[in-house]
Length: 160
Image 1 (spheres, rainbow, N blue to C red):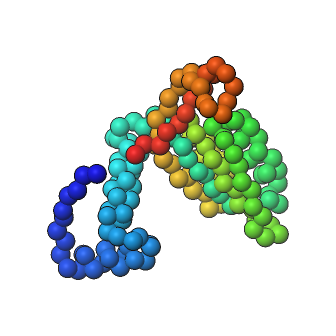
Image 2: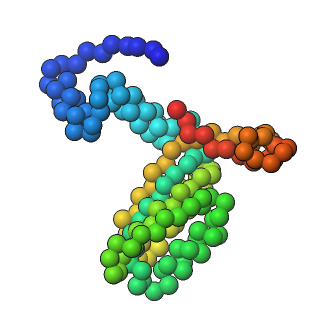
Image 3: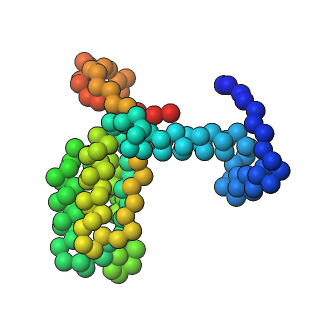
């Protein structure tokens, strides 16, 4: 663990302490680490960032399930992109509205394009994509809980 010291004027320090108390941090270090991670992640996702070719993501959206054939169109889009869609959680909010959360992984450009296309479907509202850059590694290897020989498969590892 590396340590460093920063100086803050009194007003900024008080505002920071109020923020970390409101968010439930037990100390300033935890809050600073999260702020740094968020800024680093934002710079990776910026158009002039390091490219971030892979990601893991959560796409959430609300839609009216009475909208003509919308549920079928959404499900069809997920099946058409089964290589990106890991899992879907569906929740009924009331008699008309549903919320879905889709876990995605794959190429950053493909994940963003899928999310934007799904959010743009007529009847989908309140769509948001939470994207985390990742490294992808594909190497045959064994797992202690799996069958004998290592099978080729990949892992998406969030960047630190």
